[in-house]
Image (cartoon, rainbow, N blue to C red):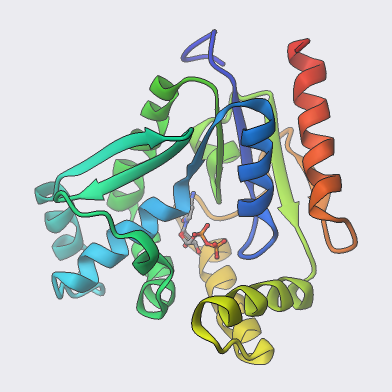
Length: 228
Ligand code: CDP
């Protein structure tokens, strides 16, 4: 790492429901690194904007709120969590209004600049596994451990609808596919830090792999490189 030689960062990017979260959490557990879900910050910002009834179509209103709110991070069992104005958004981060608006919030350059800086500071927690959309391209481009996790859209919709069924009792696959496709399109075509494969990133298509196989591959490569 260029900014801190003693800290390792495993960067895992990819589209929605590509298996990133599950894989990243398990890789972090196995390596005993701290897990950071960068998407939860973009979701947190969205949650706060909705709750304060800020007009998301007005970036200056969003930025004004961002500059006023107090964002605090802490690690619990090697997972980075945060509060906004003292409140933990918890499961509300996965609610429908948040997931339908987060890609618009994440497309605002000022929001990205602010959150990228916070994400870069996470090295204070030590070795980390960070998942997101631009971790290998923008947040930690110098990391030797960059992965791009992908899976076919139908498989991703199937996985996400299972998650939603567990959480909300409903999760129609074709509706989920529509929603994911819309968000992927926004994420891949936005001007600032669109989702793309980072230079030097290893692409893993997990469509026909188990989570265990993907985790094992990443853990083995990191261990081999670090000699641990
Ligand atoms: O869980 P899922 O993959 O569906 O989404 P997430 O990782 O929680 O990210 C939610 C949204 O935040 C994405 O669709 C992006 O719009 C945005 N995001 C981003 O722009 N950059 C990141 N590094 C992480 C998330």
